[in-house]
Length: 448
Image (cartoon, rainbow, N blue to C red; front, side, top):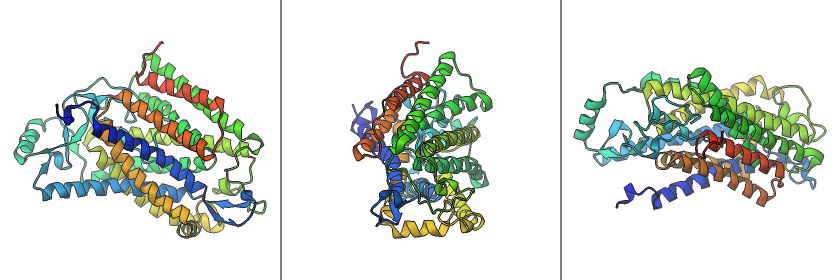
């Protein structure tokens, strides 16, 4: 038996390991960047150190990583042309008949830059949410797989299957991907701010709330139907997320979280958009703010998924190209927004989130900041590739297990590094969250 037909072989193991590694690194590297001291670092009191707080630049960094996917796609096409191979669809993808590729799974711990759920659009013809909110039983059109074919085969295939297929997304129509990119910008920036005031594991677990919003939005906007056990599982997810958030707030009482961003008493206390970096707040209030921002970001993420599915219903677009287009449009938008926000807000509130010159100075003059930025870009780019490859080669059950392991690894590494303390309430909340997600995806049998 050839390795290409083996359900689980060395190549699949390599993809899963790569996805786990890069997915874990994404969050840990951003948190590590948040912990970098950028000024007043010689003060013996760590509470007086100014740490890196530039969520807009981190959002820009994420989109650079996504844009690299488009570069990789075009390099792959050029390589195939150089070898004289005509790729199916012009982008190196051809449909695979049957298999596990059609299983849809909620990626409840989705990372910034993680668009592996985009692959599901080509599997379902709109039968479920683009975030994987509803598991599809339709395996008629499964995931796309890199596969070369001869020009004759490509021609005959396109002639026989052109009827009824969605048109390719080309030309000015690619601007449609700007809408999900805008949602991605808002969601990612809010999550980057939230990560400043929460631990890495709590941040990652809170992102499980995306299944709640994507499930609701799929019913409201996409006319999907949820079964009774799925509504119950959404309640369990909400309960789990609530317990995780509560554990973070309780743990922060009494100044237990020493790694959060305490500010000097002489910092400007103006009520403006940069208040989250300048306002002196009790640690519990900072934790509550971080939890709120991460949860609010999931609304934008769910909206992004709705836009993506609506686009995928009408146009043919490979997932890797969709990720790259969102990266390009997101990168362009953030690059234009940073100087505008600096003029409107940053100049009058120096040192805040929108002080562009301060951000450039901190990034270029702090080795720990710019070096982690490079690693974040690379990890996001590779994570998207690994994620897309894993999604089209493993089942929904395997994908849910991988997602759970990612969060566990982030939690274990954070505990090992001393970034957070062990909380039993967080354990209980996480278990409820995972159980609710597994039931929703029918990974485990529903008792309801």
